[in-house]
Length: 202
Ligand SMILES: C[S@@+](CC[C@H](N)C(=O)[O-])C[C@H]1O[C@@H](n2cnc3c(N)ncnc32)[C@H](O)[C@@H]1O
Picture 1 (cartoon, rainbow, N blue to C red):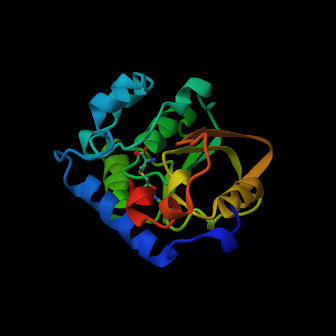
Picture 2: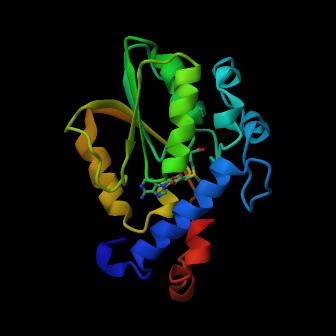
Picture 3: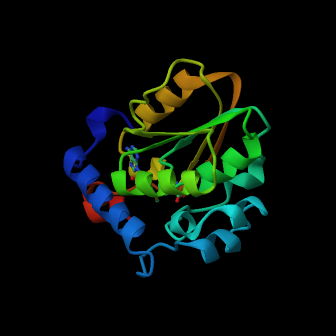
């Protein structure tokens, strides 16, 4: 989709998304219209023992849509970027896989989510975690600076998907890997549905 075809007010949409995921980060007991938490990550078959070591403060705010770890692990020493890292479940799993010789970078636009990721990284004693409050459409990273890009349940929330894919293409080194879990719709979305912010945020 090009920017010209975006039919929602992107500023309003981002605010609604921030509200939704601030709730997910602060109220972990609420039932949301999408599954969340450790039981969901386990059901998806998230990798152990890494998942088990990530604190509840993070995993109970997990809001991924599927298990991209089925596509592969990351290797020791690699630089990993998590687009829309949320409270940090995938990020902190990747940080254990890549180890102290590697680095993981989380980018998200919701401060409350990043706070959870930061606190959990500190609680786990992980020094190889870097966090940025930023849009994934404009990454604060250099060209060809990342070995693996991961993302779970985020790109579906962004109207300008071309901007995200261009940024992935820019920051991934030649031969780098993209590992995504996301929502795919197999039929054309109606004009009415494209304009409904409530359908985008869920
Ligand atoms: C469904 S949650 C998934 C979070 C995390 N990947 C997980 O699996 O738990 C979506 C996350 O994407 C973030 N997000 C949505 N649109 C974004 C954008 N354009 N730029 C940066 N972050 C965004 C939200 O703040 C939220 O934390």
